[in-house]
Image 1: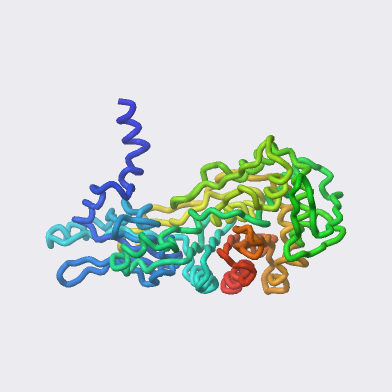
Image 2: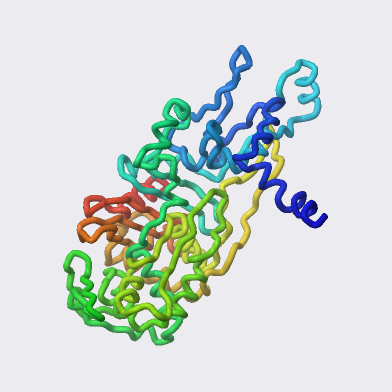
Length: 442
């Protein structure tokens, strides 16, 4: 009896939505699948009904929204899967439904009004171009996901024709790199290292370090990126210049268990709030870790793994005074006539840090733009703060991914962003992708 109650109350909706539940599409016998719209009502997915009654699911923007909107053939993915029950439910006016019944016609399913912004999605999509990677844009004050792009991509309009290829392709076009990709965070992780150092050292503003361009400890030698020698640096300078040796020095001084606790507080080794399937991030440092592991972890290398989506959540929390709003992709549900059936409202998810800690990190990230590695964002019509990152993925030091996390309108943040470019290898910079998105917004 207890299981039956649990099944009805807790598990029923999950099982209805499951892509493995063959019975759920029985609703399609009486309902034409509803539309998916962007925040302004632009159609992103719709069902065209032919004169012979045949139905074809169409995606007007092709591959641009492929991973976040998903597909509804060969199983389901993205919002097509998450909102399958709602799309096959009709809350049309009862007289309209009665008319359909008399004419033996299907009802029109409800529409999903997403939080996605077509203009920002287009900007992110075109900014990535032919590069592999991902972009996630969130409104920090609400948790609304405004853009989510993953490349390489696929055209959901041609899914059936390309299904065999997509399932065997080495490029993993079907993988949503934004939520399911796992990468070393590189120097973007230094915001977490900085947070832990601030927590362990109340006098962190007095920090000073002489960077000679290289640090050696326990048989491990680590250099600053590009062979730079930064000289005498403060804590703020260390962040602005992304000084590897300084952060390695900081990492050696940290308590590994407390560091692990702070990583847990910002959702490493934890469930993430997400409407879409995701990969859980990992932080491997512990009390038995050797000095080399401590240095590598402090600068975002080592065994730490994270998704672009997770880094967007961290950036969003910093932008929002330490509080992470629950991220969401569905703004409302309307019937076919546009009448609102259900509305999602912003909700707090968790305090990842104190307002004072978030304010200080934001100040350091502003320095990254003002005089550091993200200076391409300075002097714009908008203010910005952020952290660049370069994550080596091979023993060949010229093989790297490029990262950027950040925010705009720093005093009252409007956008939080996370960008990764796979295999950038020094030729492409994630911060430039972020700039194109910001420019398009403003």
